[in-house]
Length: 284
Image (cartoon, rainbow, N blue to C red):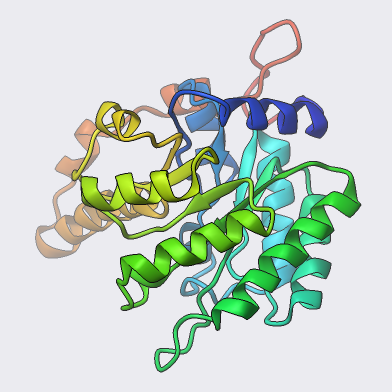
């Protein structure tokens, strides 16, 4: 039985207080249980990884499907879950606020709101509107009484606008508007990371690590408090499945299965435990 949502919210806030923790991104209840069983102190959803399980592209999942997904993941594990809530499934601040209230009721411990529009010609919301959207999310969380951690994302480096000065200005404004944690996915150099950390200090910074450009220890030395991996773990899983399937299709052999983890090992990791620590039989 997962810990109460309010206890996980408190735990999540405490994790941001000092040090650096890794918050990997599962894409369904099974992968969430697997990662929690490995000892990660918190998890984060991945909009891309979840969309792929539905045969959809990232950002094509409807709001209600995403809310159901958040509910399922939060119920599947005992650790805090942070939600990739994309752009709040609305443009205007009032719509963002209404949807954030719904998300905060799913059992999650945190959520992120980004400033990308999905329009290649104008990929970022006007800065003033972007700040108003974060302020609306902050007010919605406060009104909900849940205390979930609000992360504000500036997506310039992800959407073809890698302007560090603009990114820093947006993150500072988001921090002033009430964001608890700040996030600029796509930054990779020590100089960029250090600049973001300094710009919003003392508020914590999330770093997206989807390649081998940094280690946990190096990120910690730069002042990063939280590391997530986005859809990278899901891509690793897809890669392994595709490689094995292509071998079958190409030459009719099944050697890839010889190195796969056993069903028993998977069951041992994902089967829920009883309050006294015993694992329930698989399927219960």
